[in-house]
Length: 462
Image 1 (cartoon, rainbow, N blue to C red):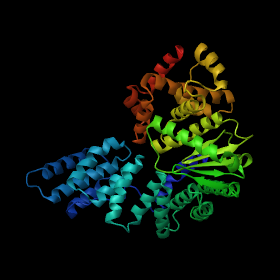
Image 2: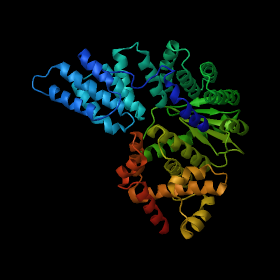
Image 3: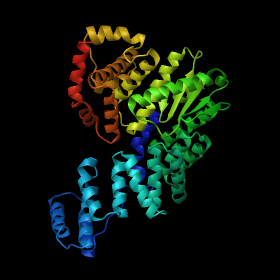
Image 4: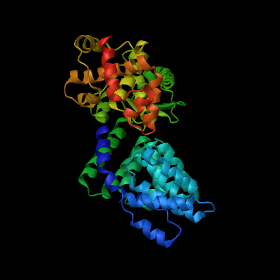
């Protein structure tokens, strides 16, 4: 599924126009036709636009200025925001806030504000603005569509389905909406509905890359239908657990006991409690590898954790560590809107895994010890953290291990110098849309290059 999502990230962006879901479509009109015509002429940034804004500021902030003057300035401020939407949200925030003060509760302004936040990945805040507009204009399909897409990003799949179904009724051939409606069905385990939505999406596009990606998604849904046939389901207030075959008889009690322990450990450490239930699926081994494709001890996709049943349950400690690892990935995904660098994502997951399985995050896996001792400590062969993604995709098992070890050790270094609270601070900053350099500076006072040096110095003294 990760490969599928990467393909879609590259192929779906251009089709947003065809899907009738358009960011920055709204335009706040000035109070006079002459100014509206002038505003439409500004198609790029420049001194001329800035000079016009300053001229309008002088008029808007003069004693006795009318609402027309304030609306005129707000319209030009928002045009500048749209023209420089590729910049960071922070670069536009002052302009947006000024426009909001000039024209409070304006639907067009609120829509552009929501678009900007959505575009930058701050989905929680964008939803607030879109819902404000929806309350004022409940039949606006553009806003209904955007709420559905934001709800999907926030993993509120019931809400996503509710709004995307309305949007698809209005735009029955909208590929982008049909795809994400299918994805929302899939995440809620409505696999037949997912297949039906994706089959409609296939009819709505002629792009071969999009068709290949959707066919892959359909195959996954059909495999899920096959692999969960005959399974049982039990849920509590935190988890929905699916048991393949008769595994519930063997795993039911211990699964919930371990999940409860893991939940408390990880949420306390990362200072985050999910407001959605997490799905945990125990697959028969052959079915798991049909679904996951790549080898793995388990995997996490969004708010879903998948675990193969190999030769029994091995040991409670093993399963506790396994579930802590994957649950951590789920929390990080929710916390950062999937914006966490791979080294930190895997590092924190292993940190929680070893704490759960071994009683201490410093008690690493046995197969790590010789590599850590011989290469990382004695050989001083540290791994640059920006190379972790490449190493993890290597065909060499040793390269993959070195990438995981480097991620784990770097996370331990973070905890040693800055405490576990630094995990919370970094993840929070990433969730706000900040870069990893900005997040690291917020939490540690160091950018990534500086932290890499500190990490390598720390390794020499380990």
